[in-house]
Amino acid sequence: MMDIKSLIRDAKRQLAESGIIESDAEHLLAHVLGISRMDLHNPVLVESTLATIEDQQILESEFFNLLDRRISHEPLQYLTGTAPFRYLEIQVGPGVLVPRPESELLVEAVLQHISNLPAPVSVIDLGAGSGALSLAIATEAPTSRVIAVEKSPDAIVWLKKNVSLFAENVRVVEGDVADVLPGVKCDVVIANPPYIPDEQILPRDVAAFEPHIALFGGPTGMELPRVFIRAAARLLKTSGVLVIEHTEEQAIAIAGELAVDFEDIAVHDDLVGRPRWTSAVRK
Image 1: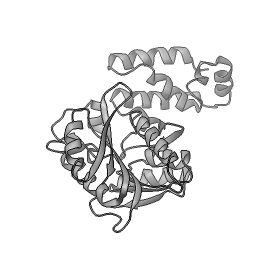
Image 2 (image 1 turned 120 degrees about the vertical axis):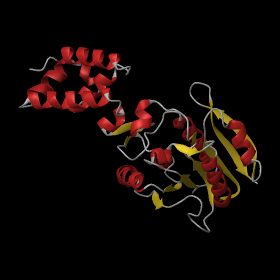
Image 3 (image 1 turned 45 degrees about the vertical axis):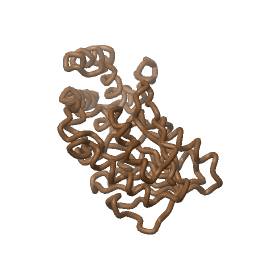
Image 4 (image 1 turned 90 degrees about the vertical axis):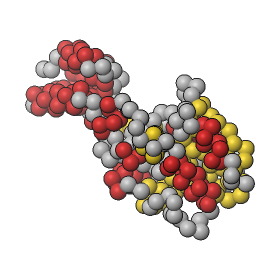
């Protein structure tokens, strides 16, 4: 029978030597065994799980394959196929950005705003990617009407998978935010544009594997956020609310762009106190 403790210990050592968080070893082994990471520390459950596996060498080989890929800095979420986001396990893989926990506070603020409006509240998610934000809102505010807009064909595949799993009433629209949904007006726009300056150095996990189309916003990083802000101004009703993500260095520049068509501009911090998203009201 597989020596689970030895496997985890050796895997953690290899990950640490590669500068990767050691707990990823537990996530990978739990994924291979088909149990939760918490269950991995239940000897009785692990033993009963192993007893049902006829060829444990195949399972061990699969684990080492995933471990090698993680040591090569392939994102953990790509290897397990899922990324936790609020109450959901979003399906992700090559071609779509991994949802970040920083976005959960943004969703919380949007949900609070929706709760203060008469139903149904219309929401458009620009640059929806995997659909994490759209689906969190659709499932936690079930009377809302959500449209998820995405340009990348690769990301659309993951977006549609997640919509089919969690909220089939979310409408998926493939198109460029600059001209999508002509004539449509809504109560809330969520914008998650590519906002990283083109020359900025990113962590290896991100730079080598995640889609650059979802990351880089132009030479200064502000070129695409401007497009998203103009789109939001076109799509929002008067007094509608925009929430837009950005880097911690872009808050002032974002506020300047918003000042043309928006008022009540407010910068909000992420989980570690960095200014990472801004809200504004359409004039």
